[in-house]
Image (cartoon, rainbow, N blue to C red; front, side, top):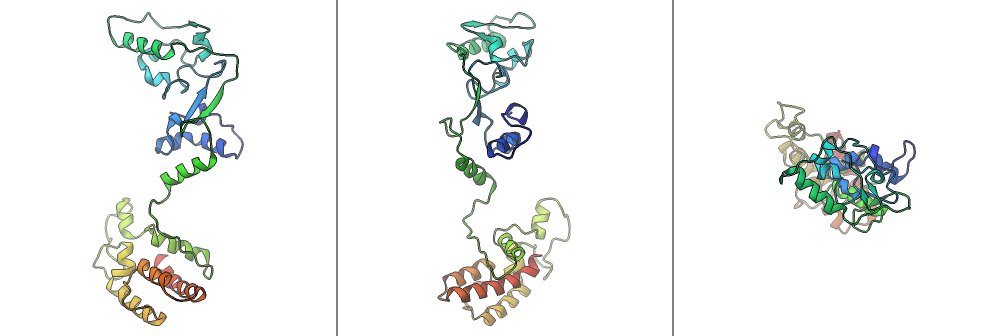
Length: 271
């Protein structure tokens, strides 16, 4: 696994590359950025761990050849310690066993992997191989992280400058099903009883029910629709109401005012 200890991250600094390297272990554990994306490029081999760094192939030699790694005397040895020109210098705890067993099998595979490889006089460096072109592009990394961590739906973000930010945030959470309604708390194991709707006490409290299909809420929204002059044929749900307003012939100012009124109406139930 790639971690802060074996990636090129400094203890201080706010750069994007530095931040990614310091959090590489977490990104790998969450399957956001594969560990194989961070690769060592060997020059002299004096700073690259022979067994623990990913410098040849798609994984470390320690993970590819665990039996041989267990027999290594110096597990932190560098590439330059084991590859000296055309010579392979080994240091085993005991002679490797033959007879077609796992040690001989891993040994033959390791020899094949290292075949023809030689160090050179250049400096060792780190590489980025997420796209296969060894090029680190901040914009691409950001998109990879966003695809893995942000919502995958196409819900349009509704933001109204006429109301406070906290109300806008609450409405965003409502439209993206991110409010801590009782169904969500039950799903996460935070509550284990009393998960019916706080208004009707007759249905599991989900966001669509709490803000649309609950009888008490539905009756209230019909009155709000009538008050705002919204077509009574519009479904009683936050999404449908906001969509109806966006598709209406109202001018921009009136849409903003109506949305603002709806935001304020929704906010007390969201809090």
